[in-house]
Length: 99
Image (cartoon, rainbow, N blue to C red; front, side):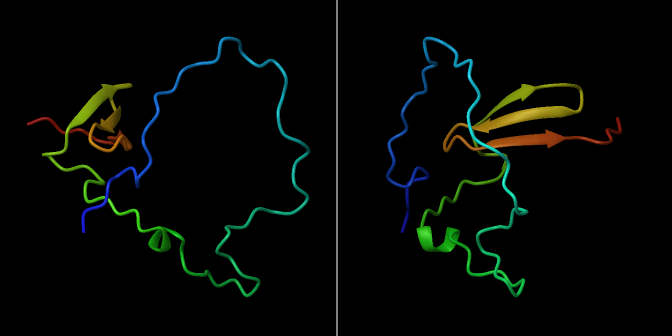
């Protein structure tokens, strides 16, 4: 069964607002430390929600035949956008050996 990478959601192009908001948003910081939603009091993780959603795309990751738009940020850092599903990959090279 082939599912759409957008899971039935039609992508809508983003358009910037006419004016920037100048006031802060949010509230005071939380009083307790953050824990993932799958954490239980015993420290065990529950079942992840990704398997329950059913949104499976077979074109995740980086493979030579994926249509990727590449944007070099520096000599070691590159931003790649998968044009078929709009996933973003940030690649960093620590060492380059010529030859």
